[in-house]
Amino acid sequence: MNKFICFKHSYQFLFTSLAWLSFCYSSLVFSQNTAPELVEKIVASQMGTGFSVSKNGYILTANHVVQDADFIIVFASGELKGLRAKLIKTDKSLDLALIHVNKITKPIALINWKSVPNGLEIFALGYPNPSMQGRELKITSGLVNSLEGLPNKVGLFQFSAPIQHGNSGGPVIGPDLGVIGLVNGKLDSKSNPKVAETLQNVNFAIRSNELDKFLKEANIQFISQDLDLNKAKKSHEIFSETQASIYTIVAARNPNAKNKPQPSSDFLDLFNRLSSNQKPKLNGAFKIGFDKLLELGAEQILLKTESINIEKGTSHIRSFDFIISLNSPKKHNEKSYLSTINSAKFNCIDSAFMMVRQEFKDSTFGTGVTLESVKRKADVPDVFQKLRSPVLNDYFYSHLCRYVANVDLFSDFRRSE
Image 1 (cartoon, rainbow, N blue to C red):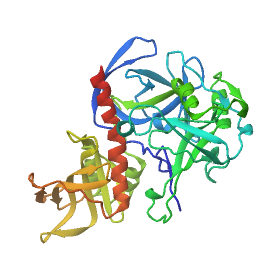
Image 2 (cartoon, rainbow, N blue to C red; image 1 turned 180 degrees about the horizontal axis):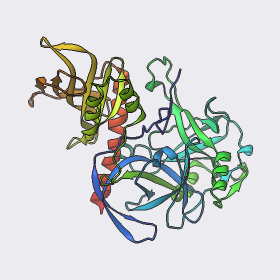
Image 3 (cartoon, rainbow, N blue to C red; image 1 turned 45 degrees about the vertical axis):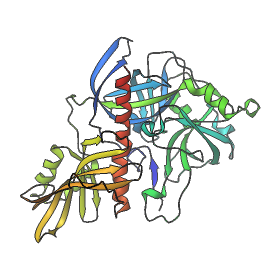
């Protein structure tokens, strides 16, 4: 079965949720009363795209981009100063969110869904992978492939314009400058190694009639019109005429906030299956920051998101710490171990891995006596290799490259002030 990759965690969205980046920065943002507010320490969580639907500051985006954020910051195209946004309304089942900024905005009209034909030429606009692809607004073109989406997901349609991480919440625009949908996700064979065929541009968006209903429920005035192919524009005209209406949306978290991070559902599921003597060990690992879990057969991989850093002098090498915990012991130099605490590097361009340090433990989840420590010699050239497990390779890529790219972007914002 193909895996639906959406820009949220519930069905493997392109942005998995819950991994807050451990990079603090100072950024001058503007609150709702327009008074400057210096937010000293903010941790970037998710980044996506949004677009204005009214003249008075209302912006649509995807719910998973902004959920659980302490702050939502909106950057207009080409701007280095962000505006604080207020969350107005969400719909988790549709994955929609409405936010508001205290400024005049240029709205984009919604197209009456009944007037949208199959095969319509469309354009996806957004801010994908900003630290790797740049902060400029991007545009791709394609077709409406199907007016239907997925059998178990109401309100979607399929389109072929290429989308990447960061397009989530962006508009799918018809040739007459009207929005026919909001980018939601895609099918991706890479995330499921059992899929033999390579899937290309199997993308999904939320239909404009669902956006229409959502905005009416929020009592927001917006422009709605039928598709008019007599007003069709060329791609460069669509880009230039909608650019001012499309924003980078940043969900951010204050690490000094009183709310303690909560374990995710997969953590709780594993915890409930453990024996009484194993539960404190998993809990201890979580408390010291190993907050992301992947169960891989008889092994558990615990990633420490606050350890993720960009290697100096690079934009694509990440250093990080993680634990491998085993259900049954393995041997290292004739000694039985049940877990290792590891430091490693990951190359985001080649999607390749290099171990730097391993500490072998005689108990699970990084606890117990240290049996041996092995460290890579400093004078040995770096050699990155693909991991034997494509699932683990993709897991590291998702959590290391997609999130830390946001950190890189924010560091540029800070230096520009």
